[in-house]
Image 1 (cartoon, helix red, strand yellow):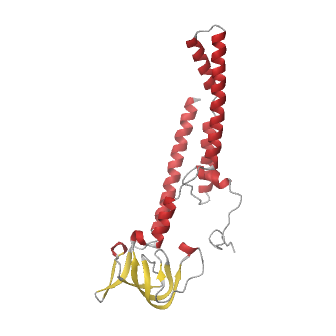
Image 2: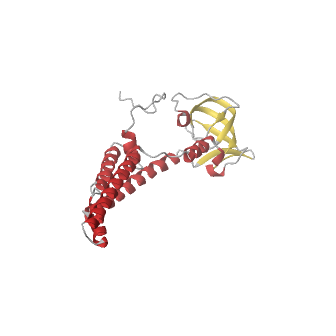
Image 3: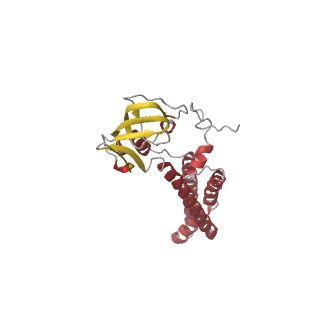
Length: 245
């Protein structure tokens, strides 16, 4: 049984690593939403520079298809339409005018514009949202709470019965050392060996099935948490829905 448990733990660890690696690659694709190059006007000359080289007061030239790499303030707009669904969830493009903010991470779907860099890097609105998600405290998952309850219950029962058997063995004339070893064996025997394989293999199998449907799960306990959800409330049509027509 010990060998089986070790094998299950190793397989579960390998599967969890593969799942997290896949989720990291998906996150990397999201980070690629920020463009690597941007067109700017510096010293009266139009040139392309790395997005990481943008500084405040740079004049950025935008046209259809460009992704916005910093928080900008529109100076001139000509039929400009910006898709802000990444930040707002709204599928309808915004129509910013001169003086309006153009957040980093959004992209131009129509028209042209000149804009001045207002914030870069960690000072952008997109970075602020990312920082908020990092500051949030993750509560224990329903599976963790249930397992903690089961573990406490099993531990108390095992220790109680072990203590009772130790006292009974001493009363029957057994040496304290032998009685302790006997009680210890009873206590260990009361711990369910199949609990660990069951707890580890079930979420792993569920995560594997979700991965086959292009839903990578980074943390295995999230599978059970998602399964515990009764309602998902959203007002963003197109964000969590798929039109099969």
